[in-house]
Image 1 (cartoon, rainbow, N blue to C red):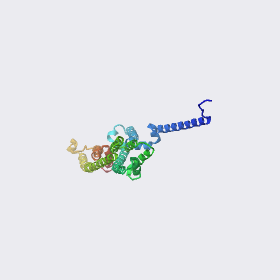
Image 2 (cartoon, rainbow, N blue to C red):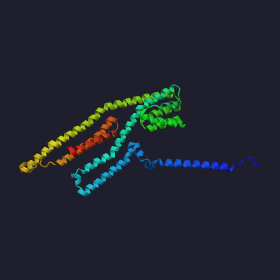
Image 3 (cartoon, helix red, strand yellow):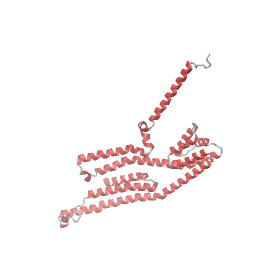
Image 4 (tube, one colour):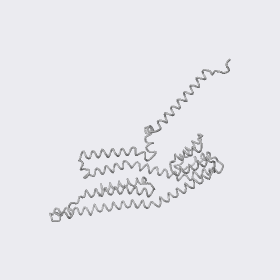
Amino acid sequence: MSIFRKKPEKEIEKISKEDQEQKEIIEKIEERNKYNEGFNRIFKHPIKVLTEKPENILLVTLPLAFILFILGFISTISQYGIYSLLTSTFIDDLVVFSIIIALLPYAILDTKEAMRRRNIEVALPNFFRDVAGMNESGMTLTNAISTVSNGDYGSLTPYIKKMNNEISWNIPFIEAISRFGERLGTPLARRSVDLIAKASLAGGNVSEVLKAAANDSYEFINLADERRNNMMIYVVIVIVSFLVFMFVIAIMAGTFLSTMADAGAAVASSGSEAAASGTFGAAIDMDLYTRIFTHAAMIQGFFSGLVAGQMGEGRAVGGLKYSIMMLAIAWIAFRFLI
């Protein structure tokens, strides 16, 4: 009689069936992950992909603006000829609309992202202090995070709850808090979380590190607020300077140049010697001067907005909202008011 007992056929069949089910589950997970990565993710969740980062929306708005400009450019030339680009303002309108279509969604999403980051950074010090206090009272870090996850930390709350869920699924604390910092996506959060993770890994006094991270975050937020408040006056100066520039141009175009053109036309109709020599201003082209002023106002408005963003927020991109606003003001003023 053999000392090795063969497994019953039913048991072998049951094991092979379980292996087959596990294999099918793994294949389904891999297939799902494949569709959640790369270009497949864009097709499955287009809105989420385009809005999770402000720059992602440029993948749609830049080609759309370029197509609009090319179609309008070709249509203008085919209907009115190549010289219409110098005499017509339609091409200027195309440029303005193309810029607005390309950059307005990006400016909106960038402003929204900046607000999200600020709200998160404001809530970080309180979160670190609460965790440190509970850790000092005898709680483990995992229990402390589980407790504070039930609190209200504004925009930071969903991220804390997700980290607590990961820890409850037996993901190590260091890995969970590292993922937490990556999801927050701010330099301040990454720096603080990296400090906490390394202190926990080294086995040091984590509560003291949490307090230091809280104080550092608090000082960082205070310095950022102080800088923003001090520089806000310069942002206002930039915007007021643009409005003054627009007012001066409106006065020049509406009174001085128009008066000169009317006087020149009157002299030309009288047939005087001054008109014959062309010295008084009979040749003033109001449309040309108005177009030159329009370009000057639009260019100043757009780049003044970028300067305002750099001064007020430390990012030129943060001034796109001002740029688009002043560009639209200049276009509306010269198309309908001046």
